[in-house]
Length: 313
Image 1 (cartoon, one colour):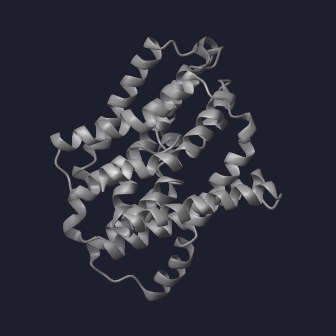
Image 2: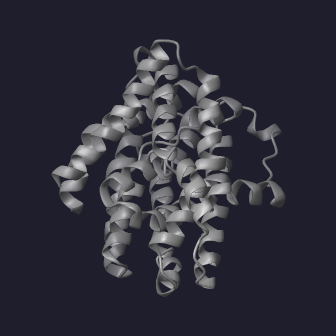
């Protein structure tokens, strides 16, 4: 338990370093975009591939997808509860879509992956990506459609999902690394040493670059600009209470390996996705509300995660 806390502290120290270096003008939004691209397109795919081939066996292949039912049902229930919550507590019309999207979907990669690695080690990575697959699919369909409803001119705006665009959003380089790793496992052939070394160097960039990017995002949003209100409180309740409780309850109905359930609970209780403020601006929603929700969810997560670990571990 103590080692897990120390590992998590190191993760957040990287985030604060990213924040501090942004304050010192070493980093800016352009650097944050570059780091994000490096993580999503290079470091993370190799991370997924190598961890699948090194830490997973053929016999565990089917157990992965049998557990997918938990994130599917949990996100569906969480989304439905967000619709009830915003009606009961009168969430403003200009932020209803952002509220439901932030209430339901979590930051499964930039924060989720480093935190799970710090707590459980590399064995958790397949389960991290399994939750990520469902989270990403729901986010770029139901989530985006709901977020777009905040547009005051929604009656004149036609929201469509082109199949090729949707497939591109879901079949990310990280997911392709995961799939290639699974296929490689089925061949039972060892990974060439050159590919292990080359990929390993890139994979090691995942955690530091991810947390640097989060630190830059928090800085760019501005701590002084964070405005707390009851609508933000609702998002935090959804992220940190309702979502993990639903996953925990589903664990009794659908027995899965204990590590898988623990990873799902950690993933379900992650902060708000870091792309929400940008998307809210694109759809003419309440950008300040989205940015403040993101900022508070990241900052309060440092206090929340030790409490969650007391329950899980």
